[in-house]
Length: 224
Image (tube, rainbow, N blue to C red; front, side, top):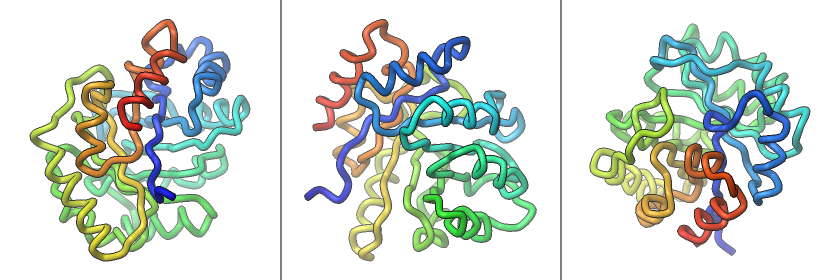
């Protein structure tokens, strides 16, 4: 049995927020098992999205696994709010500022019974994640500069790093998912899979098309 089966994660950033409940159900009916929620503070990244209340709203509308990506400074300060909102996994950035530390924040996430992830900006080397790989369930390699949807896939800058993370994980006998986010379409997802990814965050390519069922089927087939 594959310990890292491929999964397509629709990203709520590309959904119609005026119909959040409907959009969540649309993703569910299209076969999604996980949903990806991008939280942006307008400081760590140059955009503002939503906060714990949106996570809570999504949780009220689905039992799907909620993969919450905190693109914010001081994730440790806001952590309890996202835990209480119903996140299943919380991913934090190594590049962000913390009142405590990345290590402390990861330990708090796991102590709450959630899964914990580390995210890397496209230009951040894998070595920046090395101090934390024993404490994570997921490593997210951003394949665009975080902040906005619809950007092109940064293959040259990110795929060697993804492969390096896979090789290190396997050589050390570690267990964590490898996730990619940004510019993921049926033509780019297979590239990421070849370099080790098994979680594929898809915003525009999943919620964008009128027929989400077909879009999700095509995305899933591309990494099968």
